[in-house]
Length: 70
Ligand SMILES: [Zn+2]
Image 1 (cartoon, rainbow, N blue to C red):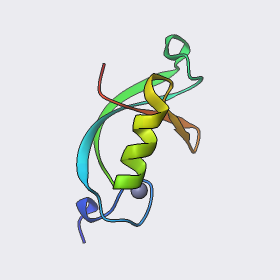
Image 2 (cartoon, rainbow, N blue to C red):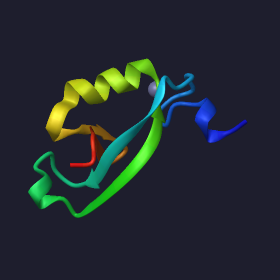
Image 3 (cartoon, rainbow, N blue to C red):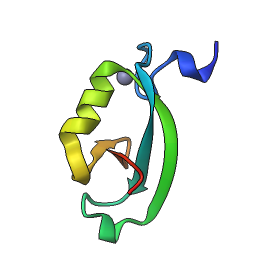
């Protein structure tokens, strides 16, 4: 089973691969300790969750995730 068969955050089938900016630290990215640009598979539910979170990002296990690399 390839990594593409599952969403990064749950067991669901991913809808698509999305460009995501991931960082450690507060919602204010200017204070981010570490920033990574990754492309990860997301299911419908988690894609919606990241969209809702917007620029402050969605926090999961100590890291924030925002759609888009900018
Ligand atoms: Zn998911």
